[in-house]
Length: 129
Image (cartoon, rainbow, N blue to C red; front, side):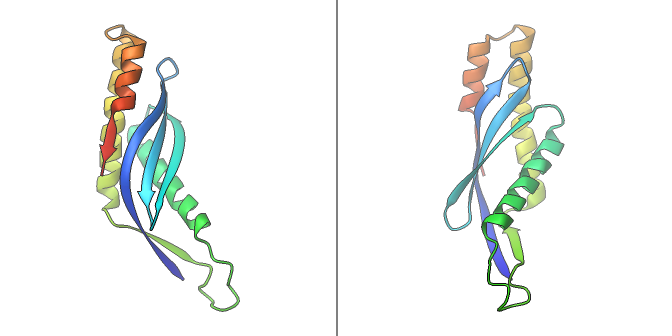
Protein backbone atom coordinates (compact mmCIF):
# COMPACT_ATOMS: atom_id res chain seq x y z
CA UNK A 1 0.00 0.00 0.00
CA UNK A 2 1.33 3.35 -0.98
CA UNK A 3 0.23 6.66 0.59
CA UNK A 4 0.71 9.84 -1.45
CA UNK A 5 0.52 13.30 0.14
CA UNK A 6 -0.76 15.94 -2.26
CA UNK A 7 -0.41 19.69 -1.73
CA UNK A 8 -2.42 22.10 -3.86
CA UNK A 9 -0.32 24.92 -5.34
CA UNK A 10 -2.49 27.03 -7.63
CA UNK A 11 -5.40 27.11 -10.04
CA UNK A 12 -5.29 29.25 -13.14
CA UNK A 13 -7.39 29.82 -16.23
CA UNK A 14 -5.70 28.68 -19.44
CA UNK A 15 -8.46 29.57 -21.86
CA UNK A 16 -12.00 30.86 -21.59
CA UNK A 17 -14.75 30.66 -24.21
CA UNK A 18 -16.99 33.62 -23.50
CA UNK A 19 -19.67 32.74 -26.02
CA UNK A 20 -19.76 29.05 -25.10
CA UNK A 21 -19.66 29.76 -21.35
CA UNK A 22 -16.81 27.29 -20.80
CA UNK A 23 -13.30 27.48 -19.40
CA UNK A 24 -10.10 25.48 -19.45
CA UNK A 25 -8.41 25.42 -16.05
CA UNK A 26 -4.99 24.25 -15.00
CA UNK A 27 -4.60 22.87 -11.47
CA UNK A 28 -1.04 22.58 -10.21
CA UNK A 29 -0.40 20.16 -7.34
CA UNK A 30 2.71 18.80 -5.64
CA UNK A 31 3.23 15.17 -4.64
CA UNK A 32 6.99 15.39 -4.42
CA UNK A 33 7.23 17.24 -7.70
CA UNK A 34 4.86 19.67 -9.38
CA UNK A 35 2.22 18.21 -11.67
CA UNK A 36 -0.52 19.93 -13.64
CA UNK A 37 -4.03 18.78 -14.43
CA UNK A 38 -5.77 20.52 -17.33
CA UNK A 39 -9.54 20.27 -17.49
CA UNK A 40 -12.18 21.86 -19.70
CA UNK A 41 -15.77 22.32 -18.49
CA UNK A 42 -18.90 24.46 -18.59
CA UNK A 43 -19.40 27.22 -16.02
CA UNK A 44 -22.86 26.21 -14.86
CA UNK A 45 -22.87 24.24 -11.56
CA UNK A 46 -19.63 25.42 -9.96
CA UNK A 47 -19.64 23.25 -6.82
CA UNK A 48 -20.23 20.14 -8.90
CA UNK A 49 -17.46 21.18 -11.30
CA UNK A 50 -15.04 21.70 -8.40
CA UNK A 51 -15.94 18.28 -6.99
CA UNK A 52 -15.47 16.70 -10.42
CA UNK A 53 -12.06 18.37 -10.73
CA UNK A 54 -10.95 16.94 -7.36
CA UNK A 55 -12.21 13.45 -8.22
CA UNK A 56 -10.48 13.59 -11.61
CA UNK A 57 -7.27 14.61 -9.84
CA UNK A 58 -7.63 11.73 -7.41
CA UNK A 59 -8.07 9.13 -10.19
CA UNK A 60 -5.17 10.51 -12.24
CA UNK A 61 -2.87 10.51 -9.20
CA UNK A 62 -3.86 6.93 -8.35
CA UNK A 63 -3.14 5.74 -11.86
CA UNK A 64 0.19 7.61 -11.95
CA UNK A 65 1.42 6.06 -8.69
CA UNK A 66 0.06 2.58 -9.15
CA UNK A 67 2.72 -0.03 -8.41
CA UNK A 68 3.28 -3.16 -10.44
CA UNK A 69 4.78 -5.30 -7.65
CA UNK A 70 1.50 -6.87 -6.50
CA UNK A 71 3.11 -10.31 -6.01
CA UNK A 72 5.23 -9.13 -3.06
CA UNK A 73 2.40 -7.65 -1.00
CA UNK A 74 -1.35 -8.19 -0.94
CA UNK A 75 -1.93 -4.45 -0.56
CA UNK A 76 0.81 -3.53 -3.04
CA UNK A 77 -1.61 -2.36 -5.68
CA UNK A 78 -3.52 0.05 -3.46
CA UNK A 79 -2.77 3.76 -3.53
CA UNK A 80 -4.12 6.21 -0.94
CA UNK A 81 -4.26 9.88 -1.89
CA UNK A 82 -4.11 12.24 1.10
CA UNK A 83 -4.64 15.94 0.64
CA UNK A 84 -2.64 18.14 2.99
CA UNK A 85 -5.43 20.73 2.93
CA UNK A 86 -9.04 20.12 3.88
CA UNK A 87 -10.93 18.87 0.84
CA UNK A 88 -14.13 20.80 1.63
CA UNK A 89 -12.30 24.14 1.91
CA UNK A 90 -10.47 23.42 -1.35
CA UNK A 91 -13.79 22.74 -3.10
CA UNK A 92 -15.24 25.98 -1.67
CA UNK A 93 -12.21 28.00 -2.81
CA UNK A 94 -12.35 26.53 -6.31
CA UNK A 95 -16.10 27.16 -6.58
CA UNK A 96 -15.67 30.76 -5.41
CA UNK A 97 -12.82 31.28 -7.90
CA UNK A 98 -14.91 29.86 -10.73
CA UNK A 99 -17.76 32.14 -9.61
CA UNK A 100 -15.61 35.21 -10.26
CA UNK A 101 -14.77 33.85 -13.70
CA UNK A 102 -18.45 33.19 -14.39
CA UNK A 103 -19.28 36.77 -13.36
CA UNK A 104 -16.70 38.15 -15.81
CA UNK A 105 -18.19 35.98 -18.57
CA UNK A 106 -21.68 37.21 -17.69
CA UNK A 107 -20.57 40.84 -17.84
CA UNK A 108 -19.02 40.28 -21.26
CA UNK A 109 -22.16 38.57 -22.56
CA UNK A 110 -24.30 41.44 -21.25
CA UNK A 111 -22.17 43.96 -23.16
CA UNK A 112 -20.75 45.76 -20.13
CA UNK A 113 -17.22 44.61 -20.91
CA UNK A 114 -15.53 43.79 -24.19
CA UNK A 115 -14.77 40.15 -24.92
CA UNK A 116 -11.06 40.85 -25.09
CA UNK A 117 -11.01 42.64 -21.71
CA UNK A 118 -13.04 39.87 -20.10
CA UNK A 119 -10.75 37.19 -21.48
CA UNK A 120 -7.64 39.01 -20.25
CA UNK A 121 -9.22 39.55 -16.85
CA UNK A 122 -10.05 35.85 -16.59
CA UNK A 123 -6.53 34.80 -17.57
CA UNK A 124 -4.99 37.08 -14.95
CA UNK A 125 -7.00 35.48 -12.13
CA UNK A 126 -4.89 32.95 -10.25
CA UNK A 127 -5.94 31.11 -7.09
CA UNK A 128 -3.03 30.41 -4.75
CA UNK A 129 -3.77 27.80 -2.09
